[in-house]
Amino acid sequence: MLEIAAASPMSRRAPQPAETDAALYDRMARAVRFLTANRERQPDLAEAASVAGLSPSHFQRVFTRYVGLSPKRFVGYLTLEAAKEALEEAEPVLEAAFSAGLSGPGRLHDLFVTYEAMTPGEFKARGAGLDLAYGFAPTPFGALLGISSPRGIVGLAFADVDARAGAAPAPTAKEGSDLWAKDAALADMRARWPLAKFRADNEPAEAVAAAIFGAAARREPIRLLLSGTNFQVRVWAALLELQPGMTTTYSALAEKLKDPAATRAVASAIGRNPISLLIPCHRVLRADGGLGGYHWGLTRKRALLAWERGAGRAAS
Image (tube, rainbow, N blue to C red; front, top):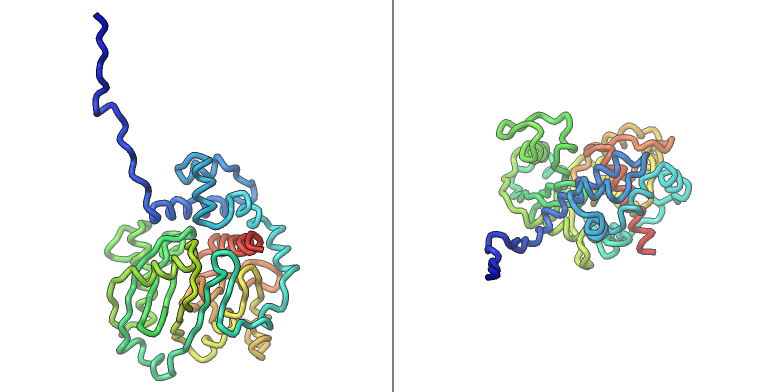
C-alpha cells in the first residue's frame, strides 16, 4: 500500500513579511559606507550585496531605488578622477544664486529651501522660549536627526556611530551602539539651544528625509531657521547658493563674502553648520582639491559628493 505523507504545516515556509523602508535604508547605508571606504579597489556587485545581506539582483534593485543610481554608477563617481573632473568643470557657482534658495537635480529637482535668521536677541537667548521637536529618520547615508521649530528646521545631523567618532559617550547607552550615537548627536544639538524645550517627534525628520531621498516630487519649500552669529549666517546663506554636484573652496567663499582674509573664519563657520545636507557644507573643498573637513566624517562627505554628482548626470 502506497502511503502519501501530507506535508506538515511546520515544514512549509511561511511567507516572509516585506522589509520596512527603515530596514532597507539601514542596509543601503551599510552598503554606501562599504563602497565609499573601498572605492579604490572597485568592489563588485556580489561583494556589496553580501555586505547588505541581499542577493546581487535584489541589491541592485533596492540600491538603485533608495540611493537614486546604480551601485556601479555610484562607485564610478567615488573615484579620484570623478573628483578631479568635478573641480575642473566647476563654474563660479556662487555667482549663480538661486532666488528661492536651493534647487537640485534628480530626487532634489523639486526641493526648495528658504530661510530666515534669528534676531541677535533671539540668538543670545540660547533657545529660551523655543519649543523644539526632535526625531530620527533613516537615509542611505545613515540615521538623520532632525530638530524643528514652528518657524522651520533648526538642525539636521547624522546620528550614527561613524558620525560620533570622538564624541563624549552618552551616559544612558553603551558606547559605540546606535543608541549611544543618537544620544550623542542629540546632546550636541541640545548644547546649541540649552534653554529650549525639547520634545520627541519623528515626523519633521521623516518629512525632510522623504523630501531629499523619496521618489515623490516636493513642491512646498522647506523652511530653515538659522541660529548663529551674523558672519556664520552669511556663510551658510552663501552655501545655499551652491548647486548639487558643484563644489567650491573655503577661499572662494571668503572672496564671495568680500573678506578674502577670512578663510579660517569661513572654515570655522562651516564646521558649525547646524543643518547638514540642506546647507551643503559637504560641497566645500580645500584649494588643492582635497576634501578638507566634515563634521560627520570624510567618508560620508565623499559619498554625498559622489551621489549628488551621479544623480545630476542621471537626471540630465
